[in-house]
Length: 355
Ligand SMILES: *Cc1c(COP(=O)(O)O)cnc(C)c1O
Image (tube, rainbow, N blue to C red; front, side):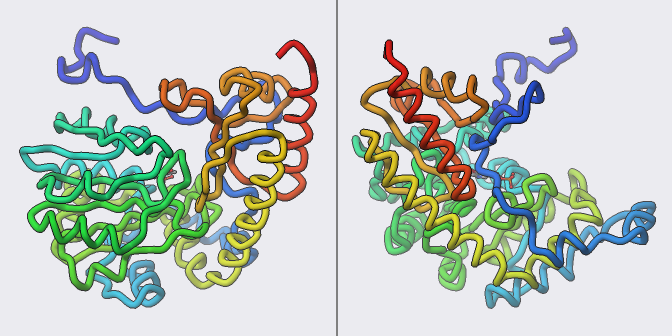
């Protein structure tokens, strides 16, 4: 740290992304990327001409992509916001919508929420999930502050019904309720149709997980026109060209290949169910997941030990040292073959003695 850094940032801890080590070729089951490439038309899309066009700025309005997304979801262009990954949207939302009372989110959830709160000096409360890691929606009713809920939640994979989200919306008419739907395509139910009735609902989505494009950095939000206008204001005051031309084009083609992505999501769901059964057969407690990962705990080996033993054998999973969840690992669902290898490797570790 230099002596020039603003005092407000000196004690702040940055978000720690899942590791991306380069020392060997790992099977990466640690950051919830897709094991599949983007749709064939998307893979084939970029031409020499697209690269040449990089001399020009990208379209700061993103209108063609917004039109496609609006048509896909049956909303208006004014209801869509685009940005450089959904983390970028979360950043803007914390900047824009946390009032005097700040924000509230679960104690066990996406690790970026408290980081954004601290970055923007927003006071925040963490509502504890229940013993079984389910979320009690009543903790968020009438709180009168920015509510942030990942549905499905990360790293648990568990969901809350849309009816409960509606109760939260109804009881906080003067605050924004942000629902992070990064994983909704893997078995959750989207609440975006509620934007027609609630001007305080912001639904945040990403191309990183179900759209197989984590490296392209593209996210979008669906919400009432007023909220979208606010986000646009912050984006245009920060970096209006924050989606590059190549990503924008691939994003448009992705919408046209919806069927491919639905098929891949169905495949992930089937492999997830298979993997959960196999882990349970090995004595694991596996939380009910509607995401492209499983959150699982062995009764026979600690979470950190299992993480380290798997890493030694070339498989990366995500371990969190937070006391409530330190016995767990979050395991991204890969292809059937990859999960077969994971299960076999865990079996080897468990039968390897001195545990
Ligand atoms: C992965 C993830 C994101 C971030 O996605 P990007 O679009 O890649 O920035 C947002 N929210 C949750 C809950 C996630 O797990």
